[in-house]
Length: 562
Ligand SMILES: *[C@@H]1O[C@H](CO)[C@@H](O)[C@H](O)[C@H]1NC(C)=O
Ligand SMILES: *[C@@H]1O[C@H](CO)[C@@H](O)[C@H](O)[C@H]1NC(C)=O
Ligand SMILES: *[C@@H]1O[C@H](CO)[C@@H](O)[C@H](O)[C@H]1NC(C)=O
Ligand SMILES: *[C@@H]1O[C@H](CO)[C@@H](O)[C@H](O)[C@H]1NC(C)=O
Ligand SMILES: *[C@@H]1O[C@H](CO)[C@@H](O)[C@H](O)[C@H]1NC(C)=O
Ligand SMILES: *[C@@H]1O[C@H](CO)[C@@H](O)[C@H](O)[C@H]1NC(C)=O
Ligand SMILES: *[C@@H]1O[C@H](CO)[C@@H](O)[C@H](O)[C@H]1NC(C)=O
Ligand SMILES: *[C@@H]1O[C@H](CO)[C@@H](O)[C@H](O)[C@H]1NC(C)=O
Ligand SMILES: *[C@@H]1O[C@H](CO)[C@@H](O)[C@H](O)[C@H]1NC(C)=O
Ligand SMILES: *[C@@H]1O[C@H](CO)[C@@H](O)[C@H](O)[C@H]1NC(C)=O
Ligand SMILES: *[C@@H]1O[C@H](CO)[C@@H](O)[C@H](O)[C@H]1NC(C)=O
Ligand SMILES: *[C@@H]1O[C@H](CO)[C@@H](O)[C@H](O)[C@H]1NC(C)=O
Ligand SMILES: [Cu+2]
Image 1 (tube, rainbow, N blue to C red):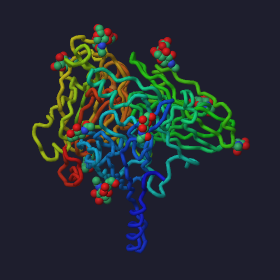
Image 2 (image 1 turned 90 degrees about the horizontal axis):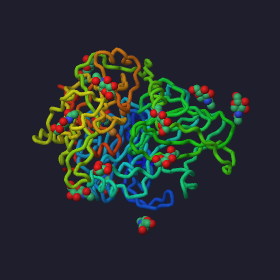
Image 3 (image 1 turned 60 degrees about the horizontal axis):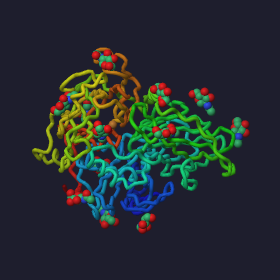
Image 4 (image 1 turned 90 degrees about the vertical axis):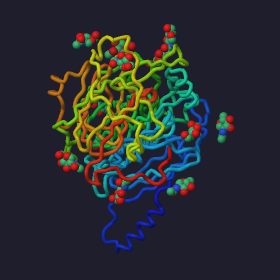
């Protein structure tokens, strides 16, 4: 079984249950895991190298919980890097202490130390994932989080015969931290990856990889659920299976209207649950993951494959390859995203804010800042409203909770300080940015509309934006510059998709809405790790409400000191 599940806590539950005469079965449970972060030699594509893992596994162990459960993960760091873990998409209500982005909600767990992430899983069910949230360590330090509905509550779709986790990733031959440090020193992007992977395996299109192929066995006429996670660092990925359509039923741990499609698009950070009906002639079918990139940006264009294997079919048969989508198939991506709608049923309503308290417009883009020691005297930077976030040495949530001065300012601008043709011809002189730590201050329980506007100061590109602490509704998107007079008329305020990560279209914009009912300091950033490193990040400071139950809970005693 995964991790070390809860034999002790089960025993405790049992004792407590006996004490209560077993009249009412326990509604929620405690799920305990021990995560040992440690080096492990692994061999892929003819190369062996030590990588940082959890419990020696790549991808790492799956966390299983039901909605309403409490999850307790004791993370012990035996690796040579300081690190933190993030539970991507878990809302962490009032409990930012367990969220994990380094220097935002906590300082790192030093080598030899432990920290216990203790959180409740509330008001969400589906697939999420966990990953390291410092440096580029999440390349190998990641795994799935499976949140089942409460006991006795069925899925809002037919119960599948079985479920499979499909974790998509990126693989480098070189040591990732050495590569990252070198790139940071030179101010340039690190190398592209050398492979994509499906559950840690690149598949037989790569040399020496026959035995490193993920295979999923199915029986004819049965329906299966795939829980798919894009854990790649820098690549949006298409995913499809030869001969088999997929029906999307859940995105980012929120149910959606069933949507049948021949392929999926997942940005780094996104998760998607699909139903697959094994209704083809019994055989072997490749599943493929390959990148989407519709801007003039270099990308690792290699295809990872796994095999959908019908039971009883000889494994000597060569699998059928699915048609691959073009790297720049913008139209498919648009129609796929347009097909995703919240389920919006009586049981799972979409509660979209209709009245807006805070109307925000953030420009998102790349630039170049002075760096005397870097190549050509400049380093690449990323910025939001022209601010490149400099990470403090004290965690922002601690600074906020203990009212420490001088760590951050709360004057992050609501809109760009200079307006220009955001997606038009670049004003070539404006490539510099302001490096600072400024938070966007939001009163408790306000409703927020945020338009994320791509810019082409250095070059346009789609950016997948992830918000911690919340799901949001994606109410609209478009190409070119957002028009506040015309575009809101086309917003979907009825059943927009509910997510925690969404890609801003290349040279376009995306509008999201959420109610700021979770107090704390919440990171928002591009989920391309290369851009996170360049400071394409910011944070919201959501104030406490008036009542104690609307306030940040006290920090745990073992919170790593700064
Ligand atoms: C890991 O592999 C490298 C290269 O093959 C080798 O030098 C090293 O001794 C191995 N380490 C362990 C712990 O097996
Ligand atoms: C966490 O794990 C470490 C290493 O096994 C152990 O020393 C420590 O006591 C554990 N902490 C808790 C709270 O269980
Ligand atoms: C880990 O953090 C400590 C304290 O900030 C620092 O002294 C040490 O150099 C860091 N180690 C690494 C490998 O970055
Ligand atoms: C988790 O839920 C339990 C039981 O309701 C509660 O006692 C505890 O305070 C919650 N933890 C957090 C971090 O909110
Ligand atoms: C699958 O279902 C079809 C139609 O119901 C049936 O004709 C076929 O025999 C079934 N195949 C298997 C392997 O059960
Ligand atoms: C997949 O769906 C498309 C429509 O989206 C349909 O034309 C096609 O026949 C379906 N293929 C299979 C194998 O069901
Ligand atoms: C991947 O990119 C390389 C270099 O740009 C190109 O030579 C190659 O044909 C591409 N491969 C695929 C499968 O698109
Ligand atoms: C995609 O790229 C191909 C070849 O690189 C090019 O011919 C085609 O016009 C591009 N399509 C779009 C929609 O940009
Ligand atoms: C540095 O400048 C040279 C010459 O203009 C150019 O070819 C190269 O791409 C530049 N490198 C970077 C990383 O900007
Ligand atoms: C912005 O730039 C684009 C591309 O150059 C151009 O088509 C558009 O007309 C410009 N918009 C305005 C308002 O100037
Ligand atoms: C961003 O800020 C820098 C530094 O103050 C400035 O040089 C640049 O013109 C600004 N760019 C934009 C687009 O406002
Ligand atoms: C937040 O505001 C909504 C709408 O006014 C209200 O229904 C809800 O009770 C408020 N939540 C809290 C915790 O105050
Ligand atoms: Cu980005």
